[in-house]
Image (cartoon, rainbow, N blue to C red):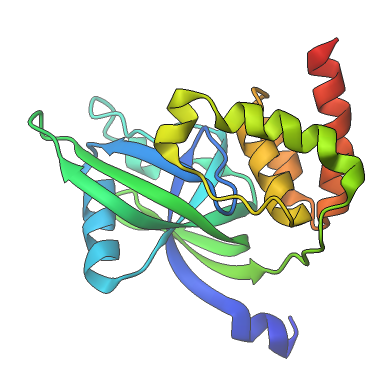
Length: 208
């Protein structure tokens, strides 16, 4: 590991889910498990975020009927996104509702699981260069504007800079109706241009 990698390494709690969060994306969650309620309270108290990672195998919910379930570590993908809490509410049914927004991407260096089943990780933040968006992606921008016009998407109010290739690529990948594994593949790409090229092909397949 280089000195630069070491300076970027941070420790965060992880929330494995069957969804992919992209930088600038919005993720509403209803939380009921004590370990995640405690995690959210810790994040809010300390002013810190948590990591959203895609589940490869297993579940994000502990089985109360299985005394050994805490020992069954969920299998996760190695690249995820920091999530920062931007809103919260306590529902009448006891569920904790939050809205999180995607921050920087990260790669997992190592993980550990606490006694309550909460996974924590040391991660390395990943930088992704951004460039002005080329006019050849105007058709994709039109698709994105149509997606953003949907009332349910408007409620989430995801962030997008239509002049930046990285932002547009993240938002299109975020909102297209494709499998979580496909979204994960797009998230892991380090170059917006490569992501945009793949998104063009995906959009064409969906349109056919």
